[in-house]
Length: 229
Image (cartoon, rainbow, N blue to C red; front, side):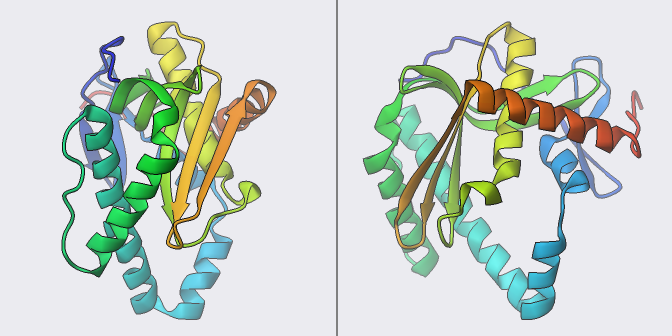
């Protein structure tokens, strides 16, 4: 399933002032895609939730979600790489992660016709960089593929930043390798083992690309390219 069609760079990550940067091919420090989205996004909803449940509960919920998400992503990566993917801890979170990963395997991973890269570094010199979950051919179409776990399946209008992230990676890939990727697949499984596919193509993709470019502009109004050290 894995086809080494492109040579993806190993990104060098740098933490500076509690912000994640990567080095581009010119040795500039550029922000990660998630840094840009976080700095320019609306956090009022999540902030209100944290105030409502309190910092201790909020941290527990986030840590639990991170543990499950990390285990599931590793399992998917191993499955797509053709290696043993069923290596989970024996505790509650490990068993939950295994069930969620199995749902991905059973319901959607067979729709990935080719895998060009897993956890692949991408960048646009002087602007941004990041790591894509999966790049390849999904249902016959070159696509940026992202795997998401969730407590409950989210509505499409709640996950705009997921699509913006995909647009960022697709555009970086097109710049780096002269490709024409214009599709994003967000594949999501929740704690009830419900599966949802969000597939963005053509005109919708163009719209998210425009929104992503606006977010870059907004970010650089208050941030500078750090350049060489």
